[in-house]
Structures are given as structure tokens and as C-alpha cells.
Length: 300
Ligand code: 13P
Ligand code: SF4
Image 1 (cartoon, rainbow, N blue to C red):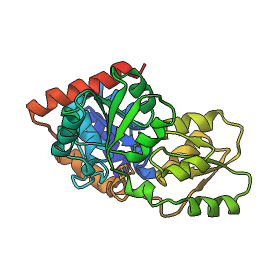
Image 2: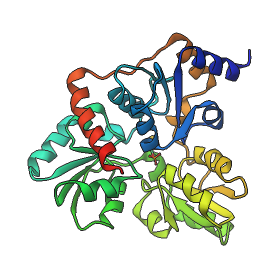
Image 3: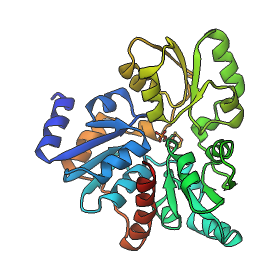
Image 4: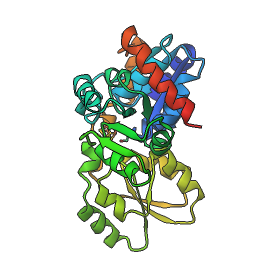
């Protein structure tokens, strides 16, 4: 059996849409209907006429799709594909912080649970974080859970940002010494990094971009050699978008183990059995939907 053609045939038959985050392996990106960053995938999940969404990504992404499209069956091919950063803030912790700063607006990174989204005013992603903070109706912003994205946004806004202390273990592992080493081996190469990187890595980079912005950037730049400071799945995505450019992984160990839990076999079985299904209880869903919809409204 050719598993790829079978997946495509069953997806067509069931009117299923396969969404893949840019960090997925090449085989998953190639079979997906759409590959994209968190914002692009949330936008797609909110507007499509599929009966089933198969989300090749991590749990919070499938959960967001289910919040935005509750009438659809949203499937995550591996239920254990989580995001450790999203787990670094819980509803209780956020409630305490809100009590300390009752006049602040809560802007929450999409890498968070539905319960945390339900307690938030607006969601953001790495591609619209600054825009959302600027458009939020307060000069005081609680920003959860990513401290690095919070610090990055703080550089460009006069608003006061109160950060949570979360971080992405995959991006945090990449140090300034790693960056200097790869740069030394590749003199003249341009360095692009994700805003989840450490502040000193961001300082040293040439461009700081979300994964979707990286795709657009490489289609427009004159650079011919680029060091990619984010998860290794991006190399496949960027090479497809700009095959004439040489892409160098910033580090061979720049791997998100959760993103890599999904493979063709799991995708096939989840599509055949239509499980595991990700759902959110209605109480939480309605509140979380408000903050997600606010982001989509403000992302123009
Ligand atoms: P993007 O929205 O840039 O794709 O980032 C998602 C993510 O989880 C990065 O670690
Ligand atoms: Fe979460 Fe980091 Fe993996 Fe993104 S790369 S899904 S932030 S653990």
C-alpha cells in the first residue's frame, strides 16, 4: 500500500482537511493541504468547509482549531504531542497575576491551554504579537507564557509588559555560543531566528521572524546562504519556498520532539479511525473563542 496516496484518497472521501505546522517532518508537510505558522493555521481552521480537520502539530493547535470550528471533528494524530511551553502557565497562576494587576489587558500567546485562553482578553501568535499588544486597550499588558517573546515585544512598544516566566525548551537550548560557532563556519551567511529564542541570540541575529514570516522573507531576499535559527522542520519548508538558497540549520539538535511525534502511519490510522478527537468543554470554549476571535479581528 502506498500510504501517501491512501491518506490522500481517504481524506478526499471523508472531506478531511490536513493542516500541518511548519515544524512537521517533510513527509507530513508534503501531504498536507496547507502548511503554515500558528496564525495561518488558526485562520484556515476558522474558515473552511471540511467535515474533519486533521491537525499535524501539537495539542494547543488542534485545541484552537476545535474552539474555532466546534462543528467539525478535529483530530490530532498523536494525543501526546504537547507543547511544554503551553504547560508552563495554568489558569490558577494567571488568575493570581490578574488579581495583582487588575487594570492590565491579558495578551496570551496561542501556545497555551484552552483554560488559559478563556481567562485572556486577546490571543496572539509570534507573527502578530507586537500588533496585538499595540492595539490592546490598555498601556499595561500581562503577557503569557513566553518570556522571550514578551521581551522581544517590549523592545518595540512603550507599553508596560508584565511577562510570565515560560519558555520553549527547544529554542532556549540554542545559545549565543552555538550561534557564533555556526556563523564562524559560514562566513557571510544571513541569520534568521524565531522570537522564542533567547534575547542575546535575538540581539545577534539579522532578522527575527515567525515561521510564516520566514517563508515570505526567503521568497523576497537576495541572500543566497541563510542560517535558520528555529526548529529543523523549517529547512524543508524554506527549501521548497526558495530552492535557490542554501539553508543551514543553526544547530542539528534544534528539534521539537513533540512536533516530531507525528508521522505518516499515525496520520493514516487517525484518519481511518477518526480519532483521537480533540474537544473543549462548552463553558471554556465560548470564553476562549472570544479571545481567539479578538486576535483574528485585530490581525488585519
Ligand atoms: P509560529 O507561529 O512562528 O509558527 O510558531 C509556533 C511555535 O510553536 C514556535 O515554536
Ligand atoms: Fe512548543 Fe517549542 Fe515545540 Fe513550539 S517548538 S511547539 S513552543 S515546544
